[in-house]
Image 1 (spheres, rainbow, N blue to C red):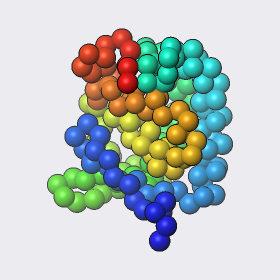
Image 2 (cartoon, rainbow, N blue to C red):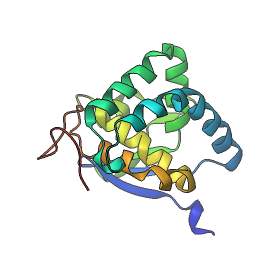
Image 3 (cartoon, helix red, strand yellow):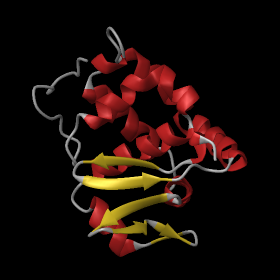
Image 4 (cartoon, rainbow, N blue to C red):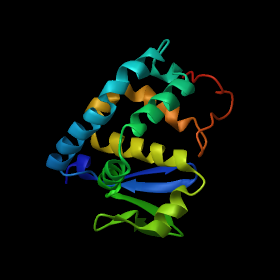
Length: 166
């Protein structure tokens, strides 16, 4: 089996997540939806870059994220999340459990992953995007680095209170 079809594993804020890749047709359809949702915000995001994406100011990232998400109805956002997270599982006590089953969020598992740590969700979404769109995301890798340098509730960690340097 080709290496690109293998499940990927990543520890995010102390929790182990697994991502299976989308089939290619679904990946293309989701890529279109992603472009429609975040496309207009890319210019604002780029304006926050000084030297490189790793140097991006977290306030710009959070502003873009908030503006982008506020444009979506709750139903569209919910459907988008379900589609993005359908192949994501989590390690809970040595058991691998999926966040989504039959197009529905499994609340208990979802809560165990993200309750009181909502920024972790965006880090997991970034992981899903990295696993499914490595060719595209390799060009904007620094944005994911900025997300990874926040705590579970969106506050910058460590010395990175204003901007993130690589």
